[in-house]
Image 1 (cartoon, one colour):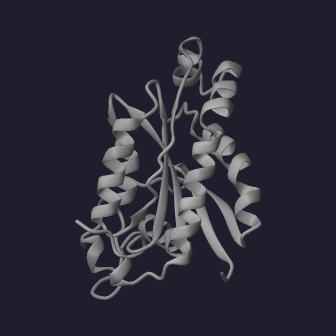
Image 2 (image 1 turned 180 degrees about the vertical axis):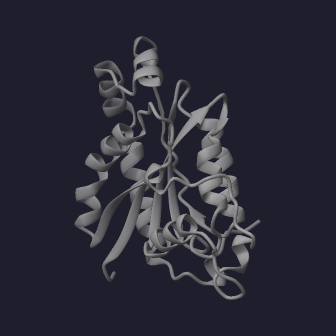
Image 3 (image 1 turned 120 degrees about the vertical axis):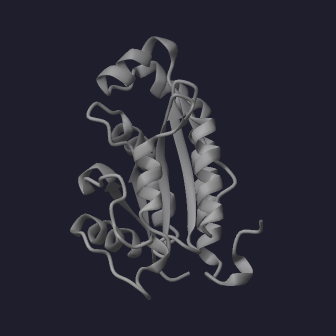
Length: 208
């Protein structure tokens, strides 16, 4: 396999957030195994793009063949996402669903994502399974090929307020994740690697 570039995207945009620490935890598990297969991992933080609620005058599906983005924030996000061969989305769950900022960022684009492989790692008080399922449905419907294994990382009860209110992961939570989620995260990365081997063709598109 020729060398590939995968974005590890922190999708949380809250002022106080634990997302970057979760992404770092994931990166430490998968970076070396992916590198050994010629896959480079690049960290991307959604908050740096400062995306407002979608405000372009054109639909994302029209870009780039029939229209162009008007605003610099859209062009920057488009250029960033377009340069990767695949994605690992590290997503929060708020109030039993996908975060608004996460869905907004996904919906900003279409052709930049379409056909490429993606893995989803969710986190939250209950692990983020509902948000993960919602994001899987959206990405699959948009034509991305989503890894079947989707790790869900829940906070240990004593660590919840530190994570939600202070942006800190407690030692108990980290130890539990290492024991219970390490192999699932590795498996998701292996599935992403397999999807990267498949050509981005209609034959490999997600089936309804």
